[in-house]
Image (cartoon, rainbow, N blue to C red; front, top):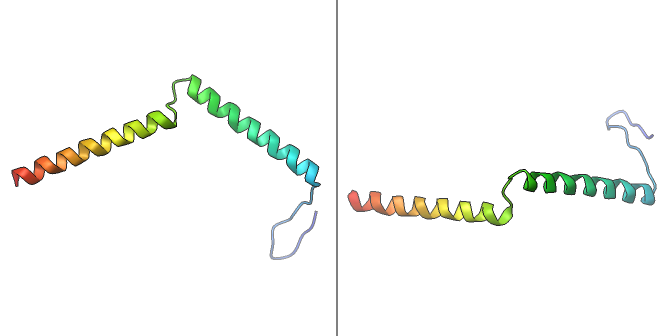
Length: 69
C-alpha cells in the first residue's frame, strides 16, 4: 500500500488479479441485469418505445395547445 499526505492510499495489484476482479465485477452486474429483466424490469427496447410514445404525446399536446391559443 502506498500513501502520501495529500492523496488517498493506493494499492497495487497484478494485471492478472485486476483482470480477475474485472471479470467478477462484470459477472455480478450481468446477473443483476438478468434478474431485473426476469422480475419485470423493462429492457432497453421497451424503455425507448415508452420514451418515444411520451415524446409523441407531448408533441401532440403542444400542437393542440397552440391551436387553441
